[in-house]
Image 1 (cartoon, rainbow, N blue to C red):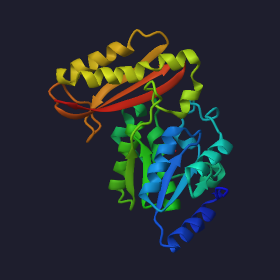
Image 2 (image 1 turned 45 degrees about the horizontal axis):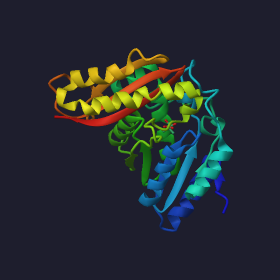
Image 3 (image 1 turned 120 degrees about the vertical axis):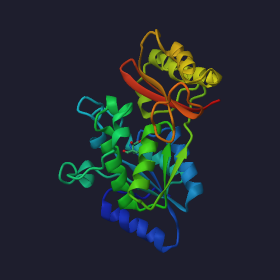
Image 4 (image 1 turned 30 degrees about the vertical axis):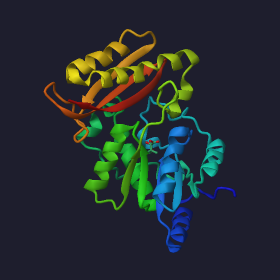
Length: 283
Ligand code: PAF
């Protein structure tokens, strides 16, 4: 069967209403396309979590800064559609920018607040406001029971959960573990920008996280020093941040902190910005 694909908000709402009318629950997997196994893991989990799965493919201009890769972000709708069909998705929502932002951009946006200015938000001002705004729109358009995100974008997950809680959005947020290549590199749509050499260099990120996970007994500072040693001085790798944050607040932990911590790393490899993270337990 060909995957039903809709582009307008009205068509999406009536397709979802038909699903609901048949008494079936709905999961939403929001994506920007250029799908890889990480997205397909979200779809697989979504199929377990609800009766019908809606996937959106929309490269959201609001979450890209003027100097970022919006124009060259990979757009592979044909291949994405085939992959989603094989994965058992029930409906693909693939709107145009004009469908989503008929007046160019929304005049009202969701403000991510202070956590939106940290880490990714410091390097990408406005990114999280733009991301939350489109996620809020997608939730209002589809009205799913459950929405699924990947753990690789840990700050995004934190902020979506906070938006859903603070604004009483009636949806359950599920987070699916990061899918990795056999050598440990986290799957990302941006990996396709990497040359073979940069692809090899990018392994510095999972190596840093593995070093952190192996050094949790030493306390936060020494754990981060062990991780930093894997990252710094590597040819072609420009580290951006390497921090441990409290998963409950997303604030960096101090050296006395004990308990669960998210180790977050970002680095530029051959011009491509990559992020990764690992949940550890500081004991
Ligand atoms: O993670 C992404 O691909 C995007 O940030 C999302 C959630 C689809 C919003 O544009």
